[in-house]
Length: 293
Length: 278
Image 1 (cartoon, rainbow over the protein chains, first blue to last red):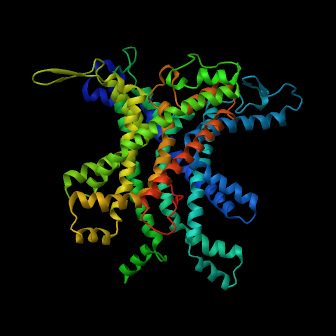
Image 2 (cartoon, chains in turn cyan, purple; image 1 turned 180 degrees about the vertical axis):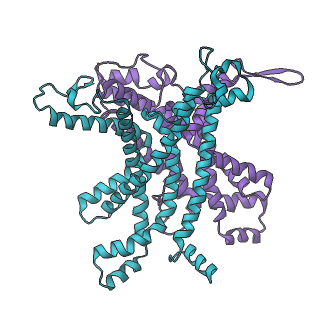
Image 3 (cartoon, rainbow over the protein chains, first blue to last red; image 1 turned 60 degrees about the vertical axis):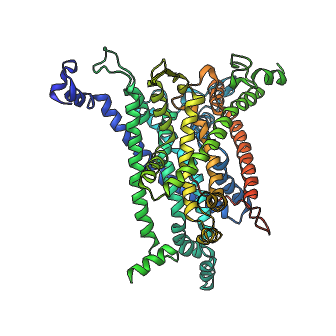
């Protein structure tokens, strides 16, 4: 990074540290914080979408759909989320490969499951073994995002379902009295009012999502936990920057990063709650109204 | 090999009793059910002990947090913030690295007349180290729940206790504490459920599974890697955990009935709010 870093063994003290912390590997470590942010940025809206779908299904008048929606939102209460994080990526991977196998190699005779092996034809492999490294990495990341979205979608479905039931019944009856159809009262009355009831649950969910991001490490993504373990492990003198086992300090840095992230989120969510309470028929909305007069 | 034989061999494998070598080839459904079930012992061990110990620390923390004394309030606020604001996964890593760094031969504590050597090696084992982390973690979450309940105790109840001449310890034991538990119970049930779920993280974080003695998810992951078929072991763990969750809900429901036994008509059923706490 800096000009004077060409011979690290001659340096010591703060100068050494400044070179150490800007080495190529450390740059990859800092970039992996971006991976975490990317995961949050993609998963949050995707989980909201999954959750919304789940909640609407759970309210449906058509019973198979209703049971499906209720089972989806109930499953996360009984089963640890880590089971899903381990299960979903590998299950989806096998499902995709199996479907491609059926479509691309119809003349294949042997069974796909042979003893302890899962064998598909070469063309059906995902990603193709000839594809470059970044395709493999982003495929793994995409599967991880999907697993996170499914799990947190189920949590969000719980929140939305509860929020939709909390909207005062009179509001919907009024909508009907005005001659609105089911669909109209759903989109014009229920949904706009639902958000303020859903917000405490969703804030909570956002916090849980932040705290679940280090689990990316378990899915084989090179995230901050991976780099903290790599960089912190003791390095002998064959490395440019030898040092004893510093993993404790790296993990403490991650701890501080997460504490900062949750603190900032708390403040932001408190502001959002105040903003959404404006003009609502709740105690918070009433307080805002009185303060304005 | 019959299934009874498998259960004899592997039923207590997670504790190190029985066959040493895990099944490698020709893995049957019975193998998977037995080993994953034996791993569940660890989940129950971690969950139950952390929950019981955490309950008492949480009561203390909640009281400290509501106290007017800054020296009590600030430390408990920070404790709760650190443990609730950071991922459990990272907490496991930090704790493990810290325990490993402790001197191998134990810490010499120099008293004036004698010397004590405190063993520290066992802390790096999951059975003790991870339990401490889980205990502190659940204490922080529970303290937040109890603190919220403490603040929503009806003013009238406390005033009535004052009118009866109760004060200090008597008032706390007879009025404040039972009311706090009653108010906190649904949220606390949720916390207990998610604590049991969190115990599956232990062997996937820093703590190594010594001699392949792992928890339910550890063995499920082992089978998924060996058979390359995730569709059998993971649903088995899921099934076990659904049962465990139902048992937890059942026990907490019984306690809830006991807590509300003075309410004459139609005892309030434990209504679990669909909100997530963790």
